[in-house]
Image (cartoon, rainbow, N blue to C red; front, side, top):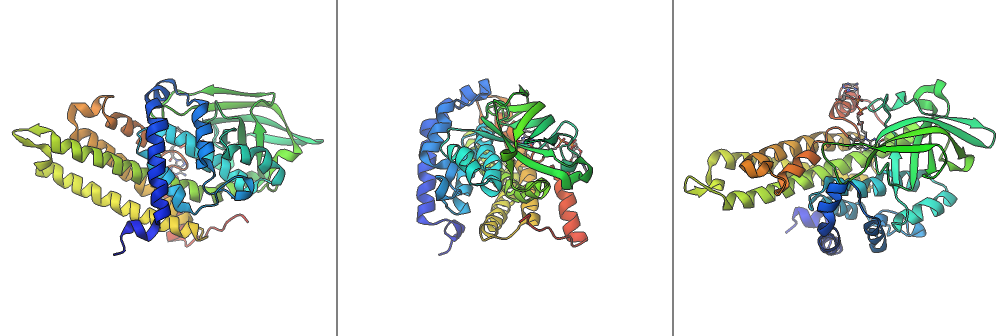
Length: 391
Ligand SMILES: Cc1cc2nc3c(=O)[nH]c(=O)nc-3n(C[C@H](O)[C@H](O)[C@H](O)COP(=O)(O)OP(=O)(O)OC[C@H]3O[C@@H](n4cnc5c(N)ncnc54)[C@H](O)[C@@H]3O)c2cc1C
C-alpha cells in the first residue's frame, strides 16, 4: 500500500530521521533549557552538526556537502521542531538555509571555499541581513548603501531582526549599489564579522528565545570587490528567488510543530480527568482536535507536494507563499487551542505549550508577513502575474 510516508520517504530517509532524532535527544535536548535562558547556543553543538553532515544535506559534495534531495531537508526541519525550541531550530536553519543558500547559489568558487565549506563543517556560522529598520516588508525600500570607491565598496546603513546576527562569523548583506535604480540597484555581499565598522546589538523578544536576533550597524565598512556575490545589482531577484525555499521551510516548520503540539495534547487529554472522565471524552474538545488535526494533515500533504515540485526544479512561488500563509495560521490556532486544553498547565513553563505558543507567533511575520504573501498570491491568481527565477 502506498502511504503518504513512502510516497516521499525511502528507507534511507527513514533511517536518517531516526538517527537525527537520536542525535537531537542525546546532544541537543539536555542543553535546550539553558540556551533558552541565555539566548546563546554554544559553539560545540554547531561543530557537532557540522561533523554529522547536517549542514550539508543539500550542498554539493565538491564543498563538503552530501548532495541529498529536499526530503532530507524536510526531515531536518520537522525533527528540529519536535524538540520544542523554535529558537534553536531557527538558528540552525537560518544558517543552513538562509545564509548558506545565498552562498550555494551566488558565491564563486573562491568564496565557497572560504565560507561555504567551513559553514558545512559547522566551523563558521552565517546570517542573512535583508530587513532594515525602515524596510522590512518593502525590501526594495532598503537604505543601506555600498558605494564603489577604487578597489572596494564602502558600506553604510543598518539592519534589524537578524537571526544569528550577534554570534555569527560572517554576514550575507544586501545593500544598494545603485540607489537611483530602486530595487534594481541592490547587490549581495559576504562580510567577515571582524571587519572594522560592524557593530551589533542583541534584541529581546517574545519567543525564539534561544536564538540571537540582532540590530546591526555598518559604519564605513570597507568591502573588498571580491566579496560581491553574483552580479552587481542582481540582489533583489536573488533574494526573491530564495524566498520560495524560505517560505516553504516556514510552512514545513509550522506543520511539524503543530503535529508535535497535537500529539502531546492528545496524550495529555487522555490522562487528565475532570467530572469523572478523561477530558478527551468531551465532545466540544474532541471536535476541535478533529478539526485541527484535519487542517494540519492538509497543510502537511500540500507542503510535501510543494517540496517535491521544488526538488524537481519547479519555481513554486505561489505554492510556497500559500504553504507559509496557511500552515503558520493553522499552527497559531493549534497552539492557542492546545494551550487551552491544558488549562492552567498550558500557561506554565514546565509544560511545552507556553514556549510553543510564543515561538509559533513568529510564523506569520518572519520571512514575509501574511499580508505580503496575500499580495503575491493575489497578483498571481487575479492578474495572472508570473514570477521567474533570477538566473
Ligand atoms: C525573530 C525574527 C527573526 C528574523 N530574522 C530575520 C533574518 O534573519 N534576516 C532578515 O533579513 N530579516 C529577519 N526578520 C525580519 C522579518 O522578515 C520582518 O520582520 C518582516 O519581513 C516584516 O517586516 P517589518 O518587521 O519591517 O514589518 P513592516 O514591513 O513594517 O510591516 C508592518 C505591518 O504592515 C503590514 N504591511 C506592510 N506592507 C503591507 C502591504 N503592502 N499591504 C498590507 N499590509 C502591509 C505587514 O504585514 C505588517 O503587519 C526577522 C524578524 C523577526 C521578528
